Length: 127
Image 1: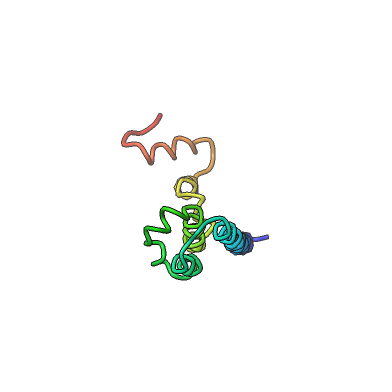
Image 2 (image 1 turned 90 degrees about the horizontal axis):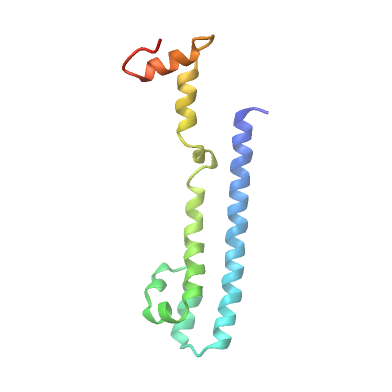
């Protein structure tokens, strides 16, 4: 299997995982919403804002909801921030250290390999 296909499959799994995670957070929000509404007295306007919060981020700025429905607001915030994870490809998480190491090792062979690597980084030559 080539590296390109490994990256494609990894990206597909990342999107699948994100999709399932968003669905789970949405189901959790619905369950917590009905638990919250059945247990506490809440105004109709606040119920409407709690229904819209997954679709309208301006509903986060209601001070009554911040005080009374903190768990619901946290679940809604998670559902809003999860799609950001799709912006970053899974391959970007490997970091730049491996890339720097690969650049230094390319074309270096034989017993003098460590000296060649270090001498290209240091301002002095290594014996």
